[in-house]
Image 1 (cartoon, rainbow, N blue to C red):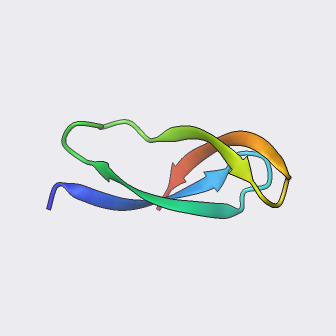
Image 2 (spheres, rainbow, N blue to C red):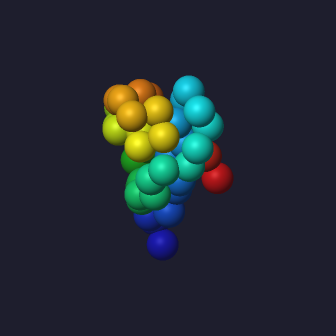
Length: 50
């Protein structure tokens, strides 16, 4: 199975807000997306965690 389920955590408050998938073979670096954090009530970078 090439796709892996990952969890995205807010870089400011460290809460785990989102889960998504990524292709392990094509994307070898950790995922970073700018998404809305409902705890901070603003947009921040969300980084991949396990």
